[in-house]
Length: 246
Image (cartoon, rainbow, N blue to C red; front, side):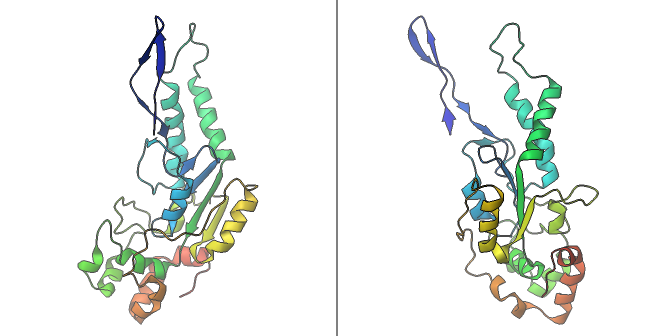
């Protein structure tokens, strides 16, 4: 989306250069006052499409974690503050302290939510994904489980998060989210999110980026006792915190 800046010079209309409408990232919707952390392969594509504002993102990777969003809010507000002085003296330009305050206030007041998924089903989805690293064409599922170490393995934008929970916590493992729902309970979550935001966020359960060849819905059929145990040990934090069972 572009905004055309129109100026009048000597009574003649002149179009200046087109300026991109900046957004921070898909995760942040300033109109709805919300931050959605999209953990890969937790059914986030549909939610991201419903929440995304039009504009050019400063950071295009849709799978930023909560700390990356928190820290980049300052960069976003600094970016839109720079190069916009139209007064003399320049009293309308915010100070660096004011930019920090605005970023902190935004993070504090925006509704922060995310989704998680059963780690055993999620591993199957990562294995069968059609973008990023296509592991189903290179390894058997058993071998994949033995080598699948990070929660973003096979992603186009990998991050060294071992568990899904790592996207949602600070460095001291304190949860920074207002609400985390399970993908398996998305219909109930839609109602909960609407209630928690006084109707500001109205989501619809739409399937997007679904791989017809994935067996995630029948994930139990792919596991042996060994691979089931590998996933249980490797993603113990998620399983224990979110009370998942095989």
